[in-house]
Length: 270
Image (cartoon, rainbow, N blue to C red; front, side, top):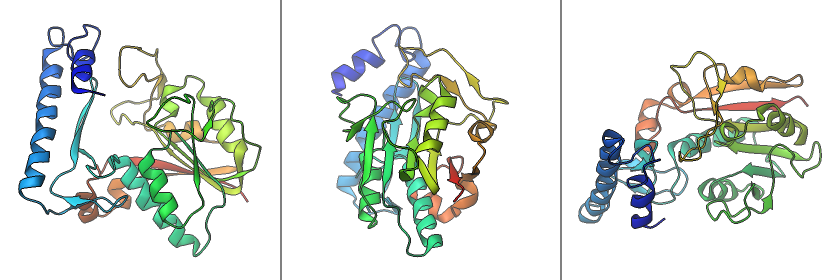
């Protein structure tokens, strides 16, 4: 998106949560974050080197960039090299741990729902099988899908997929139960699903909400600590992996991973 279009949609649209005259505090946060990212680019050119590193693309430098949208400003989140978020970098470390634990085994068929280019690159360069990317929109260049698929009714056979990656998708779909059932159905016995959603630790219970078309995230759900219970099905086990527990403090600092980031690993019984 061009800078002018971003400004028009984010700061000048009175329906935006960062509209200059309706939400001046959020607008100021957005402007400062954009300026900060611009200054980081200059700093990297003037003084290369640093102690940050991306486990996806091996970029190294001084700082990760700030994620900026009308809804959110997240400092130190995005890799300047491959565009991975900190959640992608945590997932990469989790995948490597899984492969190490299974000693030589690798999945034959992997499917990612709205999987980022960075994650697909990483998985394929780990010596694994190709990870097929799916999205509901064939024209969405962010994900360049191999297969157009609606997660509520996936065009894959039952028990045909070894690994499923579903990162920040479920919160956009009101019919959560259908989506989880479809993930379970397509997994082979012994297969695993890596699931990530935005998490609100201050919320007591997950709840369904109305989608606001004027917000960048367009969420249909707000998820709380009980999210893992919503995934429970007979025939698979759920593990919640929190970065603050699973990744050392030194590696979280090095890879720019928020300790609150997490994923859920659902394993289908063999």
